[in-house]
Length: 319
Image (tube, rainbow, N blue to C red; front, side):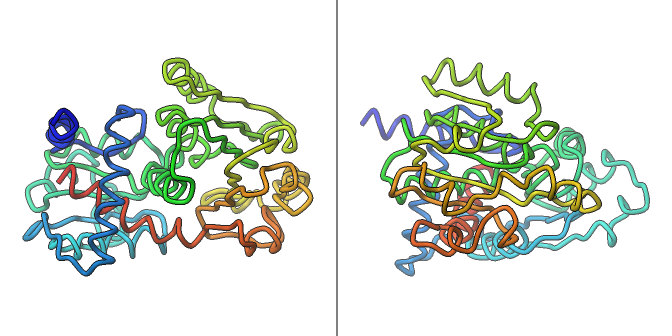
């Protein structure tokens, strides 16, 4: 009875909220969303109709190109009974300088929710402040919360738990690193990050994460040595060396990250049953070897599939 009451309280607390960063959500709220995603996934696999958003419309603003984000949100809102509108920044007036405040105010009068995939995190914050409907962060240069919610859903499905597991992230201290760190701290996981000098995660976000970890019992370690980070890891994660917007630095980054490839030699230091994860798209032979990304330890396609289910959970909960 208490469990059911807690679920109802959490469900009520999420209605009408924005989903901009994992730091905005409590540990209990994040676990509720993950459990909801797993439940929605079961319904879909069983062919059970689940349409809580019937008649609702999600506007999807894309200032950055996408495969998984666009398809999973468009399919997801459709499966929930609603409709998605693809809105390229080239087709909107924001592409010609219309203030984000005006865009948010106007779109809120047409739509029931807005998803935006953009560059500066401030754009998402400003859009949410201007909007009277929930805003979902589909990716910014600082955060990728939808991806990480589905990542930890995938780990839970494979490992049966999250608390106490160790995740090792090898590579650029980018938006993935930031959201993975906060998610790990909120969900009671331990995390080690190894990045080359000059490519570390944002120190303010790391400090914020460590403050959360102190209350949940998580251990957060930032280091330089990939071998140290990956030691006894349950989950090994990496991302491209040059994310969107940093393509001009590709050659420079290849030199800086030369010793940070996740390959068979490095993976030997993780647990034998480690899970390999990557948010995709991947560059085989750069940040990860073919022997690792295509191995039996790799769950990259389960991750990709769960973007659909995790984002359906987010939309169902807040819209």
